[in-house]
Length: 108
Image (cartoon, rainbow, N blue to C red; front, side, top):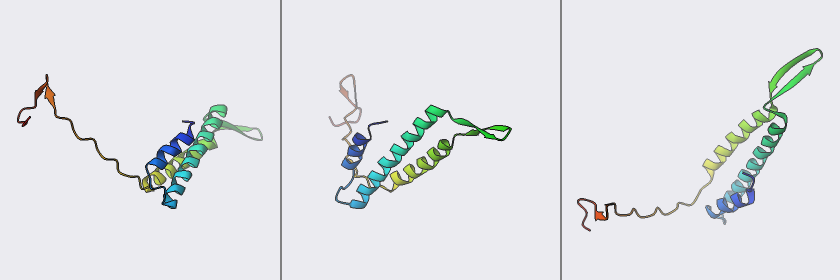
């Protein structure tokens, strides 16, 4: 997902924007998404593993951005859980019918 501004607007629509702490949390969450995307670009460029050379020795190691992605993901989850989202009103359930006839036991 690269449309972070649209994501930010959707998140802001779901919180009390007068609560500056909640607005900061949304901004921080967007920043974490941006950092995660930057890690993805580096990993796509370099691959998930890299070769380390130490003198005559060569060994394969996971890309450092893989570890960063794991840390960022943990931070995103914790931050998402801490945001006080507004509750949406659930849509009223529709009367269940079979072939246009009211459900058995229904008063309709």
